[in-house]
Length: 250
Image (spheres, rainbow, N blue to C red):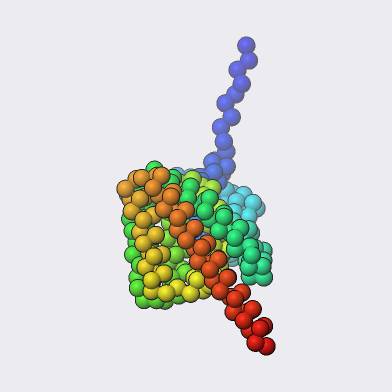
């Protein structure tokens, strides 16, 4: 009777797998620099030659980038390969905003629902910090700060869903999402009252996740996107009326 030999992974392959896992889980993010070779080898319990071979393998797959004399970094290609062409398309074709809103309605509702089920204490702390920064940005009426804080808040929720595709999918459209939020806040022309309404919606999402209420969190996230859609529609209608009025008097 022949017994198949157990195929154990080579040490460099096992090390590469560990680093891949850290990238997928988000503990190593795009642009992050890997620890020094000696430090990382000790942490992983492997020899430096095995670590070098693992890094070389990941560099060949475009997951890591080695800079001569500057260290090894996690590639940002996962975050930019999708968003770059869409960035210009949305700028040139504003009607695509409806598709972005539809996408956000689906994915952010699901992300909030999963976050309410799975968020750890560490996730909830990061969510609280993101919310505080968002609240401060709206309090100061700082448009640039509002956009950055708004994106960070929603991405924190996606990461708290603990689904690698949610985290990386929203991470990969970071620039696209940033542009969409920028355009949304610009086109809505956020008044103090609108700002209060937006923050109340963010608060509802925040509270539902912290209370571990999945259905409430999903509905709160989708209600927020529906509000943004409604205000954008109103802004577009107002702009069209102004253009008709200008043509009438020209």
